Image (cartoon, rainbow, N blue to C red):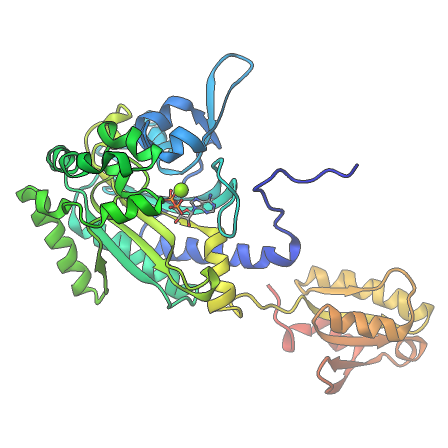
Length: 426
Ligand code: ATP
Ligand code: MG
């Protein structure tokens, strides 16, 4: 029996890889403009790293983690998100001394693992591109991170998005709000979903994030966390909004947005789209926020941080709809077809010479008919094809044919030594 890939995983095949690579290289370029450097942390971490950070009542920890005991009896988790590992690395490698830039800006890209019910835009192995700006607590950094996320979407040619923001304030804000929320939800206890009943006293903010429609109905009239911000938090949020406006960034405020991870404080944000790619229903593609207490929770100095994670599979769904031409590259510069054995040998030699000069060229190796070779050139989206035979070898002149029909005569010497006059190389 043939094997199948595990449920919720995908093979990213060569016909899609160009899009992935261009998405990644575009992100690297954007991030480097803003002063970010790459970081690569392990694909798995100690289970505790996620319980301490993401939170033991979050969906991720209660239901979605791939965790296991390794052969040495260590409790290990395949990373469900990127921030906790980056902060763990930041603390462990002491990247916060005076010799380090503040904020300490890093980005990552790679696979994440969550045991979820697979559907469109939701996998068990998926990929995120993310950033963290650590060791700094300035509204300008919050605005800059949001600006950079939106710049990414612009570079991807996706304009049909909206930015939604909220503030969760600090620990006191959440304590006060927690009480208010419990008081509001208590009378509705019997109507709540099982998950929300369990969370009501442990972590009532989670109820706001419930995907259950009944819960969502109840939550609509809940008190607003924005009424519980202390003076510092409230000023901080005002300043972030002011700076966004200064940069010409439009936003919506959703005071019931709490995000699925427990470590957030102050500014949180989501970039959503209701593109047809998501059946017209608002779907979050990029999400993030500030986490001022996370670094100390993981054993480091207080210092604050903010970041976001962007789901690459969801981004690609969106781009297929909104900017399908993002990645279009001719697969080949020249396809060498041959009419006889002399032509075949010349073609083989030319591959070597032109490839070494940086051109993408190819030929048939199977001895198929000339007409099939030309069809292959077209199928491969080659910019040009050349037919080689005894005549071309004898006269040292070839015809370079554009796939759309124009033909140009060229000496073989010109092709071998001056191809950069008519082709781009690298
Ligand atoms: P959702 O509410 O859709 O479950 P989330 O709040 O769990 O999302 P985050 O943890 O904030 O998502 O992750 C940031 C982004 O990563 C999401 O906006 C999404 O684009 C992507 N993402 C999260 N989980 C998955 C998944 N299982 N499959 C594909 N992409 C995902
Ligand atoms: Mg989720």
